[in-house]
Length: 338
Image (tube, rainbow, N blue to C red; front, side, top):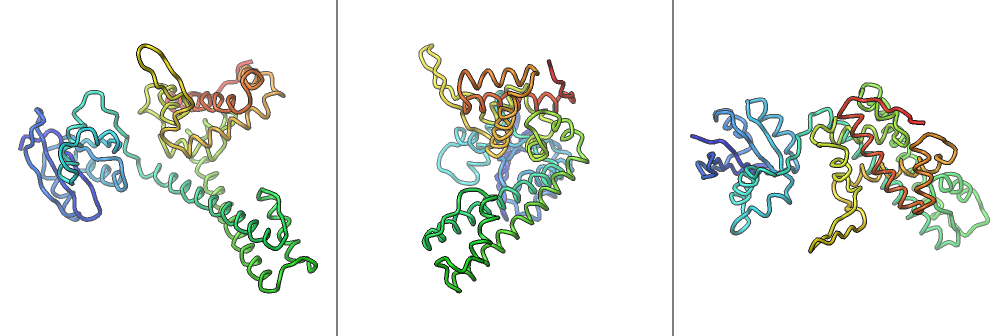
């Protein structure tokens, strides 16, 4: 078989395989069961294997590389324009193979296990934060029905709820106090697990040189540094910092026509979690920039005065993303410019 590119539509149990030659002509197609997939591809001469960047793709990429194939992943939205006819698994696999042969196609780098482990830790941390916020909002809403109001924020919730439960003069019944006490215990359990997650994040930084260098940048702490590494590794897939910040969705969205450039708000593409962390870091930088005299802080302060705090936050986040890429990709150190 003169197969140069394999398009593979992956699923849980059954996989649809298509092999095409240099001219893009279909040479072979086959339905393969999960347990037979690696053995089947091992019998084919090394070539390019392409899949959509979806659930399980990183695992299969590592397995196919072990048997000598080159593996590339494509974002699903870039495959859709190349699908012809009705949507079915074979047509999806053909579209993947067709998209891979386009000279300007953008690919996703498969993640090694180390990055997946860190990303999994961040996913758990993100979920716990959402659960904590949801629980606080639920308790505040239910307390309002008893005429008791707690101000926003974890700190206020953590200190005031025990006092409310101990106060015998409020409208809470015995049954109501019991329910709120259970919810408070649940909150404490979530907080304990969050602290454990943060401790594991700190441990990852100690064993990772890229994260240690990233931590030297103002506004980037252990969480942002490890989230960056989990998402893009050393960022070698990006040509420059501008491309990385665009991938994070921190650059203006463009809607231009007829030679007239029209720039809108930020695109908000790509990794929303990482973008959020850069924005949080930018807020911290701006809050402390007025007390500093280095060039970066002076620029941030002047920008906030000229354009407002929120716009300045996005601009500083964009700058932080670019700096982070340079430090990771070029193995450079952050130097403060006076």
